[in-house]
Amino acid sequence: MASHRKPRQRPLSRGPVRTAATTLALAGAATATAFEGTSQAEPVQTPTQVKAEVDRLYQDAEAATERYNGAKEQADAAERELSGLRDEAARRADRLGAARSALGALAAGQYRSGGLGPTVRLAMSGNPREYLDRAAFLTRAGDRTAARVAAVRRGLDEVDRLRDQASGRLADLRARRDELAAAKAAVEAKLSTAKQLLNKLTAEERAAYEAQSAPAGTQGPLPIPAGDGSRAARAVAFAYGAIGKPYVWGATGPGSFDCSGLTQAAWGAAGVSLPRTTYTQINAGQRVSRDRLAPGDLVFFYSGVTHVGLYIGDGKMIHAPHPGAPVRVAPIDSMPWAGAARPA
Image 1 (cartoon, one colour):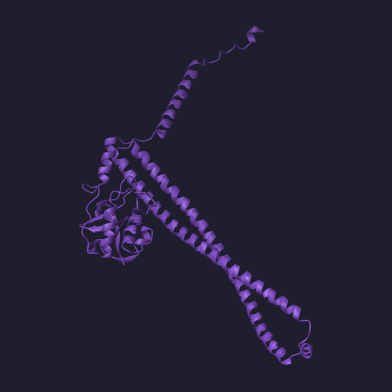
Image 2 (cartoon, one colour; image 1 turned 120 degrees about the vertical axis):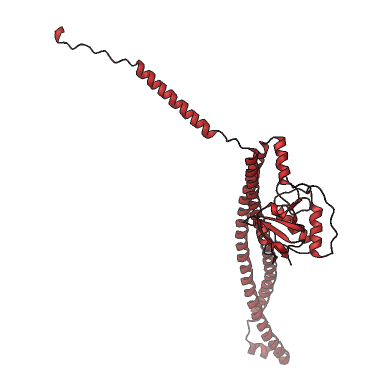
């Protein structure tokens, strides 16, 4: 029996296989860890790269700021119109209530005196002439009553129209407020990212960035040049007086400004009302070519017309650059040119 039994085969040794598998697994894990670490590690940026990225974020934030300014202008207008419509509807409703009360009293009086026919009232009257005079008066009063009824009906229609119009403006106001919230979130996100990037720079690198952002000799208050008393000269004088004041997005002065807020305030001081945003200010006056610029002209930059300054002559402007950079003088060739306009 033993001779027919198959010899027991010894299992293959698992030592080398297990060792190889373990080695491969560890190598794979190490490789995965290495790749994972590479994908999660933040790339190290040079100061030049940081500056370029911060500049881009500031431009994006300024575009979002102008969208915010436009939505806020529209929301303010919608709110004023809504308030006016509600006030007018309330006034007309009060007048309508008084007219309806008077009409009701007149109708009740006519009902009470209308039980007898005119022939019987004439026969029973002690003074027929007086009755006839009264009858003529009542006829005219009836005409006036009909006119009052028609007026009340028109009043009801007008109040309904005003209320429908107010409802439409309320819906528009809510939409503008949604736009405001979205634009505000976009601005704050861009500025927060820019601040985080700048915080990675050393003090020396940060100073170098600010020096590049501010051309030499443009910081600090400057003497206001003598003007000719024109509106353009008054706008330029206002801009000189604003030098050194901080940039705050959405601000129109007097203590801080954004770019279009500064130009709006400057020309406002000269008695000219400009719209709120860069992309509406460029259409607020006569377009002028770069070679025909005069002090007081509005100068615009970037393809989306997202930045504006006030030209002061000699190839320079006064503008509110971005957060951390106060109102200052800068050359107009420091940013991509988009156009110029001369307010009327």
